[in-house]
Figure 1: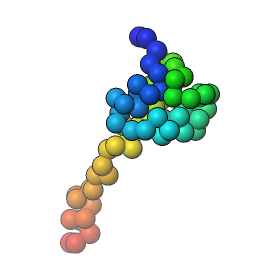
Figure 2: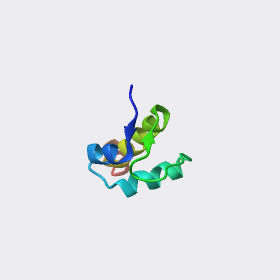
Figure 3: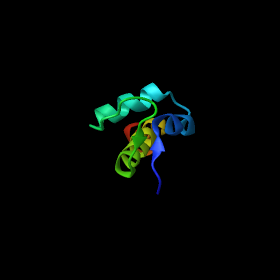
Figure 4: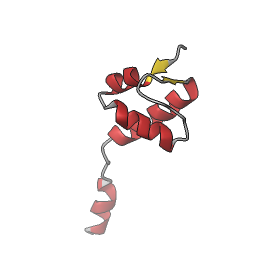
Length: 69
């Protein structure tokens, strides 16, 4: 798999490059700017991080039904 640049990843995820850079720094990945490349390991971490962020919180309706009894 080839490396991808920060701005390319941001465009693909429909977020700003700044958000990607901030997330990479939180994950401990050194990046200089939007032209920096993202290695495969960092890309995997980003994908996991942003996929969790984009998933809606699911309500557990089964527990609510048990409380009303």
